[in-house]
Image (spheres, rainbow, N blue to C red):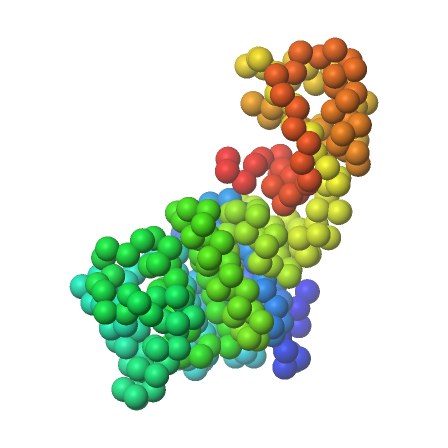
Amino acid sequence: MPDTTSLPSDVLISARGLTKSFGDFTAVDGIDVEVRRGEAFGFLGPNGAGKSSTMRMIAGVSPVSQGELRIFGEDPATHGPQIRARLGVCPQKDLLDEELTVQENLWVYGRFFGLSRAEVRARADELLEFAQLTERRSDKVEPLSGGMKRRLVIARSLINNPELLLLDEPTTGLDPQARHILWDRLFRLKRQGVTLVLTTHYMDEAEQLCDRLVVMDKGRIVAEGSPRDLITQYSTREVVEVRFDSDDHAAYAADLEGVAQRAEVLPDRILLYAVDGDAAAAEVHRRGLPALSTLVRRSTLEDVFLHLTGRTLVD
């Protein structure tokens, strides 16, 4: 449990018993979190797990219901403006002014932080290049693609040179190519020493970007660690996905006993968790089971979440 009374200088976020309630509903239920300078930290979980509510408390725009929260060693309830001056926030919704041009969106936002006109314009030029939007600087925002708008929001969140960047579902709604371009921009920020905190329900995103993460479900943390450590602890090296021509895959569960270390029955397939996926797949065929398909893949954080909660991230 983090000690918020005397924090090391490299701890940027420390929460103890952090709780957020809305009437009788508890969105965040007594979580403990510590984020250190320079790392990429993630909150992984399905929609409604409490990730965005946690981020809003960290950003200082939603009050803490119970527990302790310190950002840069300060309490957001008493030092909100000072904390927000050192933060960059990329919300889930873009919230851009579509009547302004790309560069005007950056200029206007920069003035909120008290930057001079010259400082804002110089910083905007740097960020447009970083976001690969220099050629679109004089274009209105409205016709931009979803990926371009998302990169502009991230550029806008960096206008004040933040020490800590909060990203709420940064790639939701983007196509695979746009997601990978955005990941590349975030990798560059991390190499520059910016601390990243992100929420996501994409397991591949969490594996790509996060040094450490917590898995959240129903407002609580159910696991914490690096992606590799979590997969090692809660899953096997490989998974075999077996599909049958049936609406009731549970009927085949007994026929697959002993094929793997563990099995999970889903509505449309059975997952076999094995050290050697090829050997497990071969055993399925040796038993003469009428599988429509067998797919061997490596374990992911999706498998970790399924093991911990009995549900998939997209349930």
